[in-house]
Every structure is written in C-alpha cells, then in structure tokens.
Image (tube, rainbow, N blue to C red; front, top):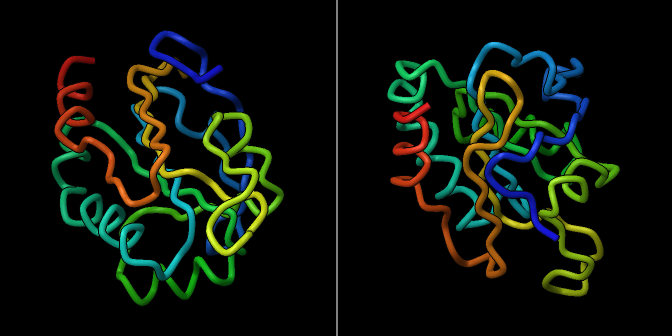
Length: 155
C-alpha cells in the first residue's frame, strides 16, 4: 500500500555526495521535498532534477529544502551533481531501504536491473508528515511540479 497525505514519513539516514550522513530528522522544523529517481545520467531523471534546480529559489522562499534520492552510489551521484550543477543534496539509497520504505521501488526495472527507485515526489511538512505523495509507475513520466508548489503554498 502506498504512502498518502497524512502519513508519517518513514525515517531515513543516507549518505550525500560529500560522504556525510543526512537524516529525515535533520529537516525537522522545515518543509522537505524528496524526489526519488531511477538512475543518474538518464534523460527523464535529469529533466526532473534540473526542474528542481532551476526552481530552487522558489522552494527556498517557501521554507522548503530539496533532496534527490536514487540507488546509485554516492560516487556516481557526486559526478552527476557536479556535471548538472545541482544546488541540493543527492542521497545514495544504495541499500534500497529508503526507496522500499517510501513504496517507491521497482523489483525489476529496465534491462532486468533489480531494485531501482521509482520516480516519485513527496512533500513532507515541518512535523515529518507527508502532505503530498506521487509515485509514478512509468519512469518516463515527470512528477506534477505544479501540485508540489501548490502543496507547499498551503502548508
């Protein structure tokens, strides 16, 4: 069963590209947008994260932080972040626990890859409660950025 508005966000602790641990608890008192994405260096994933990069000022004004999460290694994500000039943390869910906890997980993805994050977006409020949840079955689709913005404006 998928996570929905009103659910408590699953706790997580993952490494960012600076080899530092980042936890859900680090964002207490702030709104958080989490973007799960299947794989670094792929077209739709890059479009998803570049949209967030380009609109980061808007989200910051609304008091929100942004993170991207995939099952890629932190080293791969570090190169990806540098190349695309992302201005927010990319977190490595290499062990696939956070993707599974957020019900954003493919058992089998393209090219028979096992255990890949689904494309998904979550808005979590200052108390750690999910205010918006979108998990996409098709990796070719992008999250509803207007709905993410609208949710943030209302919380």
